[in-house]
Amino acid sequence: MFLSFKIKQFIPSFILATVTAVFVITIPGLSQTVQVTPTNLQLGDTLSVVIQQANRNLSTPTVSMDGKTYPSFSIGQNRFRALLPTTPLDKSGLRQLQVTTDTGTQNLSVNLQNRSFPTQSIWLPPDKKSLQGTDLEFDRVGAFKQIVTPKKFWNGPFLRPNQGPVSTVYGVRRYYNGDFAENYYHRGVDYADYNGAPVVAPAAGRISLVGLESQGFEIHGNTVGLDHGQGVTSIFIHLSRINVREGDMVKAGDQIGTVGSTGASTGPHLHWGLYVHGQAVDPVPWRYNGIE
Image (cartoon, rainbow, N blue to C red):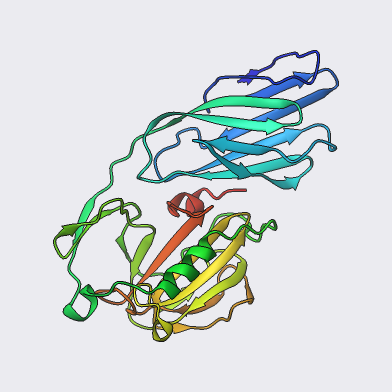
C-alpha cells in the first residue's frame, strides 16, 4: 500500500497513517519513502524506520517518538535507518512518529500492542540479598549502555549466546525476597547452564566494557559489554571467566567468556541483555527475524 502526495515547494508535509504501509512523499523531481517495521509492533520490540531518499545531498534524517529524537544511519544507496526501543514499561496504543528531513516533517501513527509478562519471585541467599551495588559498576554500565557508534558491526540475525535452556524470559516482573521491584522488568534472557559453559558473541562488535566482581561489580558480577554499533549493545553478566579485553573486536560465535554465578545470582546462568539507545529490548526478534 502506498500513499503519495504532491507538494509544490519544500514545505512541511504532515501525514498520518499506520505501520501496515510503506509511506511515500513525492515532490517535483524528488521522492522519499519511509518504511516502518514490524507491522505487528508489541511491547519490547525494536521499531525499525527506514528512509529512502532520492537526493543524496539531503541531510541525514532524524526520527522522534514520545518527545525523544533518535539518530538515523546510512545503510547504503541513499537509505537511512533509525532504531527505536520499546519496553514493558511503555503504554500500549497509538504512538506518533515524526520523521524530519530537509523537505519537512512526516507524521506517522504506529500501534504499539499490549503484551502480557509473567511475574516471578526470587529469593537471594543471605550473602547476596544485602548487596546494593557500587557507584563504580552502575556508572560504568550506565555509560556503556549509552554508546552510539556510527558504524554498524552486526550482520543478519543474532546467534544464541549460550546453549543452555532458557530459565527466565525477557520482561518478567519480579519480587525479590518478597518485595515487589517497582519499575522493574527482566532486562534480557537468562540461560541456565553449568558453571564454565561457553558464552559466545551473538553478533560482531567491539568489547567496550569488562567489569570484575573483585573490582566492585557486586550486582552484575563478572561482566562483558559488546558494542554492535548504531546504538545497539549487548551485556553479559554473572560470568565465571572473561576471555576478552576492552577494545577487542569479535565476530559472531567467538567465545567471550563462560557461564558463572558471580554477582547477585542464585546459581550458574548467563544473563544476556540487548539494549537499543540505552533501553533493554526483547532479544528474541533479533535472533529469529534479524534487523538489517
